[in-house]
Image 1 (cartoon, helix red, strand yellow):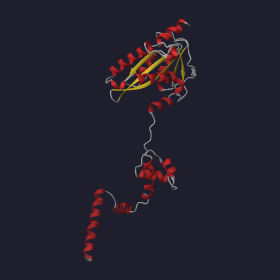
Image 2 (cartoon, one colour; image 1 turned 60 degrees about the vertical axis):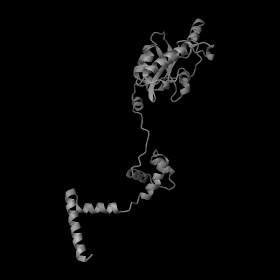
Image 3 (cartoon, one colour; image 1 turned 90 degrees about the vertical axis):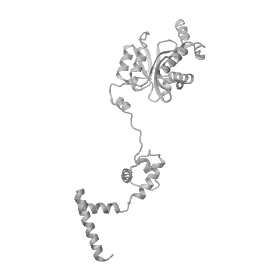
Image 4 (spheres, helix red, strand yellow; image 1 turned 90 degrees about the horizontal axis):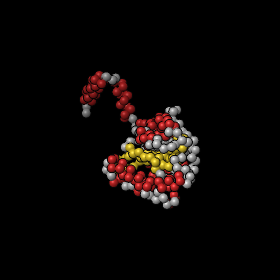
Length: 284
């Protein structure tokens, strides 16, 4: 290309850049600065590959702290954070449960002393109850929730309520079913779940003359009788075989009647829970 041809080409290119800059409403100096930036070699790319290797090993669950600890070279934490932001290495963290967070921040939610203290050898019916919630799969992948209250002395299930959601209402219904019993100074033991620490539940329990007792935080053995019952229930009942919530409810009701009146247990003198409850009352 001859010199005058090069000159004409550069002149035309400059005119095009000037026109495009006016259309985009940017200065020509800003354009050239941007051009230098994108043409400049990426000085972080090698470090990005090192960081990404560790990030991928952690299946996207490593934050900058874990990545820094697993790097074979020394790298400043601010640099790691900058590179992760630039290249979109976003850590898949477990988000906090807003319901639990709200419960912890609400002063009205209360916990109670572990009065029961694993004293499961009770011999007076209707004096010590344990309660909890479990989940049941049915109809493929549908989920139902079961609230159960059990008499520790007789092993009898005195109340239960099935729900297709885990709101407070079905737990309150299971407690209200105890209203016809003589409950003065009786204990009801649970874990420290949000249902049992809620103001409404505390009010209902107190209104029934029940005394609340709670397991230590994260200690399922403190409520072993109800956990054992849930294990038997899930072994004995094929919940996944039913397709509707109504069928599941009928199945659970049938099992509860069977458990209380027909399921003999070695630990209660080979009696059913109802038979053993009557035996204890007669021999009290």
